[in-house]
Image (cartoon, rainbow, N blue to C red; front, side, top):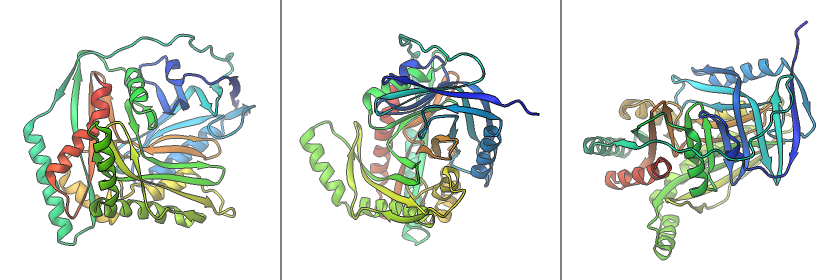
Amino acid sequence: MVQLVPVTTARLGEHLPLLDLLPDLQPLAWVRSGEGLVGWGTYATTTVSGPHRFADARHWWQKQLETFAVNNSVHGSGTGPVLFASFSFSPEDVSVLVIPQVVVGTKSGKSWMTWIGSDAQPILKTEPDHFSNGDMTWNEHPQTDKLWKDRVATAVSRIQKGDLDKVVLARDVTVTSSRAIDSRPILSKLALEYPTTWKFAISGLVGATPELLLRLSRGMVTSRVLAGTISKTGDDAKDLALAGSLARSSKDLAEHEYAVRSVADAIEPFCSSINVPESPFVLHLANVMHLATDVTGALVETLSHVDAFTILEQLHPSAAVCGTPRPQAAQLIAEIEGMSRGRYAGPVGWIDAAGDGELGIALRCGQINEDSIRIFAGCGIVDGSDPEIELAETYAKFAPMRSALT
């Protein structure tokens, strides 16, 4: 007879400062405005790749769940055993799944802890560690800027020929440090400067995404779509005028519509009703403003076995990170982008034992490799895109990680 592994969830009471609790250089985190989940210690981990990576991830998670004896006195999404997942953008790249030994969550002023094993409840730190990273060197070269503008011009030409409507092109910059890079000060800085974004850290991928790909909770689906961007100046009056121009921009509205439609079309087969607002709102962040739309839906009650993995498989990649039509955009990305995205622009977040979860698109982020970090930025290219303006947009999107690394 197989001995089941105890998994215990206990209420902690008050709201806890989640990011201050992390004891590891390689933490697990999904936190927005002080709420969410953090984890540490590795109970089990695996990687998946290939066209069936979402189904393979579900299979592995279900097999792990079969070995648990769960005692959950808290209940609700994010309690009990939790899987942290960071999926690759492309099927060919590696996705990472981690089940932490310890998870602490906070929501609506209440906190809880889940731990795996028969040991007594772990004791949390009472004081945050004081940590910092070393001196950073940005490996930027003027020729890479020119090369990327040439790629944008190529994409615009292909769009004008009618090959596709939109493509998202990304670029990267490598930053080296005088010592091994710690995710925790990066998370803390991002939390301070971008509180309304979702801060995440999984297996060295760390960032602050403004884009929620999927929240699935008690049969309700939510996705926040961002497409269409303008940089902020720091002058409130000028930025207000810029927000108005963004909301009226035919180029940005067209780009946004492609992204919204791709999300709505992906979740529609699973939903009895969908709400898609007629027009986007302008989301203000510290560095940029985005056109944003929150798409919501109610799952069909008679559908069985629909979980976060099922919906992710249909949602990813959306037009916000790939393009329209999706097959042609993906093909053009592979042809001209000139790099592997890894887990950048892939789904990142957590999934619980019920199949509910919260996952964003891994944007405004970097991949740590000991004493270096590779950071990413991308832009939606449509007919009318100007390579010089798109280049400036990438630098605006590098800004959160640039600040977090200083």
